[in-house]
Amino acid sequence: MTAPCTIRNMDWDDLPSLVGIDLSSQDPWNYQRLGAAMECPYSLGAVAMAEQQIAGFLMYSVSDTTPKSMRKQNRIHLIAGLVKLTVAPDWRKRGIATNLIQKVEDGLVVRFAQNHPAGRLTLTVTVPDTWKEAHHFLKKIGFAVPVADGHPEIKKAPFDFCDDDGYVFERRREWSPVVDILDVAGAAAA
Ligand SMILES: CC(C)(COP(=O)(O)OP(=O)(O)OC[C@H]1O[C@@H](n2cnc3c(N)ncnc32)[C@H](O)[C@@H]1OP(=O)(O)O)[C@@H](O)C(=O)NCCC(=O)NCCS
Image 1: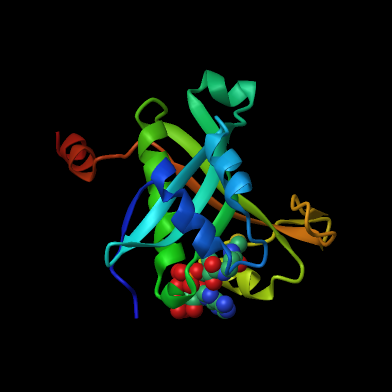
Image 2: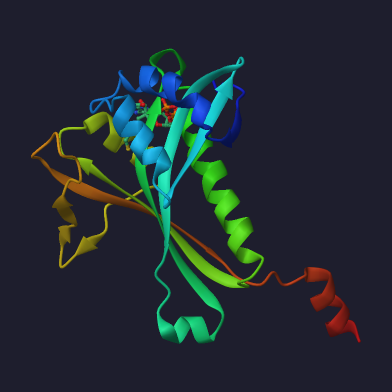
């Protein structure tokens, strides 16, 4: 059953709760490490609130990878790298992580679409081979491993605790100027 939750920006005061929740992950980050990630100027964070508690959180960074040719057309290409996603065990399998990712993705599209009528946002995350449950989760919510020359993309996982290679998972969203159906119908009738 999906749990009702609201998503808000991460706040410095959230740090102790985030450290507690992250103890349940395969790669728990301590106070110093999570704090350093929050302080990093390129890092953004969102938390899911359910029943007035933090049920899960997502840390990510956004880069603009627009090629020159696209920039001339005022089209933007963005990559949002998911750095940390953890849901508290009591709240798992109730749609919290899906909601976090969706709200962050929607928020980025709304924000960047204001200045760029067309664009593409790729969410990406590298997950160690052994994190099978995370692989299932990502596939369920529309992420896929890009395949090049018949082979899935694998790169060194960016986790210093772990020597495993990681699979790159991606989910892509595009936007373009909305054609108002009423305008088109009106123009056709004129
Ligand atoms: C992976 C994790 C973030 C999922 O969070 P969640 O809030 O439970 O996920 P959701 O409820 O939004 O699940 C979305 C879908 O994925 C599926 N899913 C979630 N966890 C799963 C698991 N452990 N095994 C298989 N499928 C899973 C759900 O069943 C759901 O599918 P459905 O809509 O058909 O029911 C959470 O289990 C977690 O924090 N794990 C530890 C840290 C981790 O692995 N982080 C992920 C790094 S990418």
